[in-house]
Image (cartoon, rainbow, N blue to C red; front, side, top):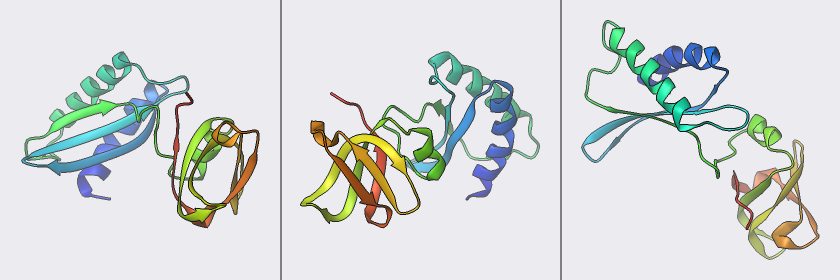
Length: 156
């Protein structure tokens, strides 16, 4: 993790704890000619625009007070929710969304498919179990080592 991200994380976490929010991720990236500091936050029930504004104002103020400046170049600060279809990156993320509808992409075909959507009913060290896959009343066990990406999905 970059030094900027580590420094910002130290500033952000106490602010989030004060408001009962949690940190989902931080990015400091250059896109074309501009730098972006993106802070993704969440809370049970979801983040509002007002929550993002509150955190943005407080983080901006704290970063501006720091000497030396932890980010000497110009950058845009963006505080937002990780989104309705956020990536499920680790065990905690998966366990937090048990019972939710998710999208899973695989490295190779399983039962003739590389993509599955369904209700996450079980998470263990070897597999994820999805129920109601693709609208059918079926259950599938997906080996964890075959999963390329898992994310929340919106059920239509």
